[in-house]
Length: 560
Ligand SMILES: NC(=O)c1ccc[n+]([C@@H]2O[C@H](COP(=O)([O-])OP(=O)(O)OC[C@H]3O[C@@H](n4cnc5c(N)ncnc54)[C@H](O)[C@@H]3O)[C@@H](O)[C@H]2O)c1
Image (cartoon, rainbow, N blue to C red; front, side, top):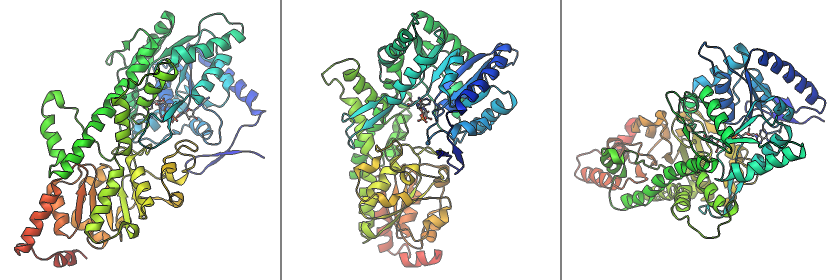
């Protein structure tokens, strides 16, 4: 019986059978012969995920000074039930990833249908045809407890397996460029020995040409640009590998405008990625304690940050929101800690700040559940019987990427506390971390493990209609700064909800006027880092007592 791979839109693709493999290789050989005749280099991109699918298209779209394409790209993806669908989709010219950047879909269609410089395949034999192999498979960091990154490990399985397969198949002259974010030391101490061993088995004595250059891709409207028009760091294991990687990147990335930084050894390039992301995680985590300070002492942290940011030396201070998500910041520092012990063999604990920052970021959103509980309690409503709406499921504003978002933990904790949750997000159609919570983000390693009573969340569906989502809700949590939420009128929100609600602002979305308005409408307001709301509440109450304002009931009635 055939096994299937089902795309996010529900289309079923039978997985390839044994007899499909030689046929597929023949197809590729034929295409590559024609492409070589055009003088094009053949590049195989391994892993058609968020990064690989777009990187493949960027390479396939590269042109020489005369405007002719210089590369032919084979995107390779394992034919697993979870991922195989990406191959037939891409071969129809359809992007396998959802992006807010319209250029992703246009570029993929252009490369597949018009230029015919991009195809996708499932057969590892395709590696034999490549002049360059770009590795974009995942390297995860699996945490075993919530808020303790030290209790975890790098999951190198997919990467090690890919490297073994590469070593078994490639032409020894092919450059292997690892773009995956890895534990520092991986290219030289894990990848090189794996590929070398496979070469020896094949009787090949030459050194594999391995290099590392990490991706700095940012989900959102400028997705393609963040790959193609951005500074790159790179390094090769040997001088020849460095020479080859520099040549390759100069041909596919706009390095004239965004010059390359060439480092001496791959461990330096790998460390650059980890330090870059640990730095970002740290400046975000640092404000968590000041956020609590602000809440308890009548301070609005948003105004404090804006006051400080006018100093050019402090302009990258950023308000942390409800936790720091995305694929990279929660894990990359962990890869560094793990490498120190498990690749380089040190026993001592030199890392203090990096793990602490990740632990703080990983648990910050739990505080949102406390604020929600307290706001509802002030309205004499127990959390266990409350209907709560979370506005925003993704990890940052105006994107649909939900990986490790703060909102996920908010939903999980409040569910555990007995509340009924609903979610609105204009960018997210399916929140797989709930719908398929035993498989996402990785099998058996989802955040579900850390909470009780999570089973029912499988039926959580993301509402697209905001007014419908608001109906009958007791609390609204502004979790993400999507543009759709920035200008909501408090009166309309309360009207849609059918009466006063608890409002929790996690991201400095409400200005003082709106906060005041919510209080005037009989709502309760709390916010991460927003201690000044209490002052506004007292003012509204005082004014009401002095009969400056009409009583709440009359105000509400007006909007019903
Ligand atoms: N997503 C981002 O925003 C981002 C930003 C910067 C860096 N990165 C880094 O880029 C790397 C890739 O990330 P991603 O988001 O694209 O991951 P992803 O999980 O979306 O994609 C990885 C892909 O590799 C495939 N794969 C795994 N093993 C394979 C094999 N043996 N052969 C062929 N395909 C295989 C998987 O099926 C999957 O499609 C990671 O190291 C990540 O840390 C990601």
